Image (cartoon, rainbow, N blue to C red; front, side, top):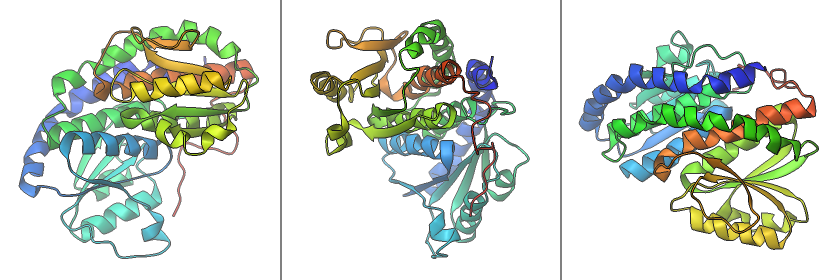
Length: 344
């Protein structure tokens, strides 16, 4: 078994550990947030953590009403442009906590009057030292180059942060996520059979929308890192503004579509893709009604769409790890990559 697969399977325990250890911190942070009354949140990250930040943007705007911006670190590190973060909440996300450019942004933001938060898996990291508050992911040591348990742990942290900043995310609902992930891991045997169809896949599109849009980015990244598949990721809304022209017979399209606000739009897209004879694989719920003949992997149970992203990335993680195996690629040793990447 690859280290990547081991870490995928560790996620229920890692998520439970993280939730139990940080739930009290979220309640404490609620009091700080009430004092500061943040009018802007800025998220800064790279790589997989940047995908987690994209999720955080949707979640925080949906549940708190506070505008959220994704920071471009090069504005600081290459262009040295002054940015006024005074009174903002600036959140850095990094598995290792050693992203040089991320930490530079956090230091500058704190210097000019922002409240800074770090979301990291490493308690002794540089990030943990330079921020006002640390939300520590308890995923355990990451050995796989392709992040899985640390990504889901970062998403868990955003739920805790959202619970502190607004009334719409409840800790009782968040507490159910580890068990949802445990149930979803039961799809591994089914996914073994599914990936055989894609053994020779060299390119694909990954499509989602709304709260799961970040998962389209994350699944595409995993396919690029571990399977060397050119995976383009799209919102279903943007997909119709040009990329659909790429579609032809047997072009692979992976879709993430839990029931909820985004489901009808994605369901319509399935019909368009079927007319174009594309090869669609849909990650959806057990009870979802899809056009006849749609190939689907069905996540067990039911859950509100807002809590679906962590369980719904798990089938994608399994797909990437198992596809690498059938392609004869070691997902633990991707070409030209290492766990910690430092950029400025």
